[in-house]
Length: 175
Image (cartoon, rainbow, N blue to C red):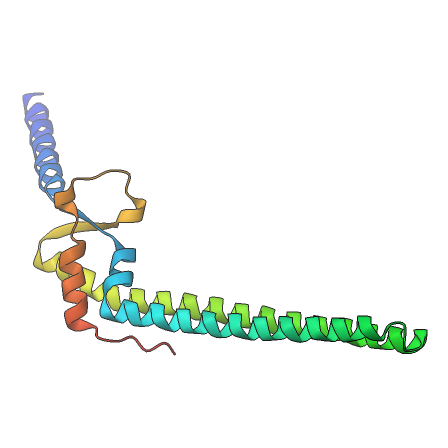
C-alpha cells in the first residue's frame, strides 16, 4: 500500500513539475492591423488598394454620368419620337444599365479578391517573422490583439515585430 502511495505521489509530483514548466511559457500579443498600416510593405498594399478603389469609383462615376445623359436624352425625345421608337430606346437604356451594373459588380468582386489576396500574402510574410521573434524571445504563444479582451501593455510585442518586418520585408508583390 505504501509503495502505491509513493508511486502516486511521484506521478503527481511529475505532473505538477510539467505543468509548472508549461505555465512559465511567455505569452504576448501583436496588433496585426497596426503592422499592416505602418510597415513599408503594408503601406504599399494599402496604397494599391486605394488606387484600385479610386479607379473603380472613377469608372462608376463615368458610367453613372453616361446613364444619366442617356436618360435625359430619352426624356427630351419622348414627345418627339414615336411610341415604338421610345420603347425601343428605353429597352436599350435598360440593357445598358444592366451591362453597367455587371461591370461595376465585376470590378467590386475583383477588388474584393485583390484585398483578400493582399491580406493572405501579407500574412504569409508576417508568419515567419512572428515565428522567428517568438523563438528569439522565448515566447510560447503570440495572440492577435483583436482577439484579446485585456492584457498588460508589457505583453504587446507589436513594435518589435514591426521593426523586424520592416527590416526583412520591403515590398510585397500581389500576384
